[in-house]
Image 1 (cartoon, rainbow, N blue to C red):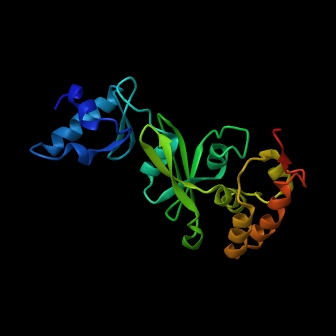
Image 2: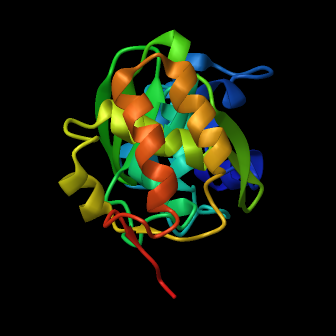
Image 3: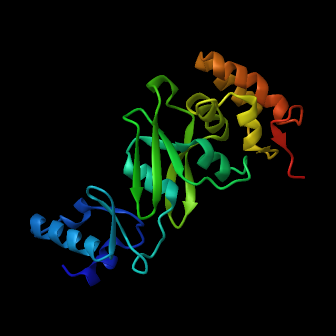
Length: 214
């Protein structure tokens, strides 16, 4: 297999694993040597062991940061500021993508950016959905309501009114305030229950936590 064969094998997939190249009559050691060489000369980006993407200009579809996070740690979902920015609930673009996992927390720096993973207990690992990201890509992302509560729960000082004011939460059709209140109450967390009471008036302009873009 030559590098010129690889784009055709990968096709439109923005990310691929070593196993894709090991089918059929191939020498696994030779495949891994070639992957290592192509990574060293900048034709491939290695995201984690066994997980790659074609570097520009060779890729057909640019990997979406959310899809990259899902691929880096299986069984994770994107949340916190990145999800809030995606839904238009905060005006700033998140400088890094943060996901939630029941596994170990960690951070990876790849040629595509910095990816952060926060640990959360299994009982609080819910409230996410698969979203279409364009280019045939999808990723598991927290709902708007869960992204807000994940931020309050996992961010140090996340329930501090000053911190919430800095977020400049914007009035959009999101979130579902009834769902937000239900999630907060069901969590059993005093911090989240307090937040569940604070956010509804915020999204009606009743507190300084909200800035209305209109």
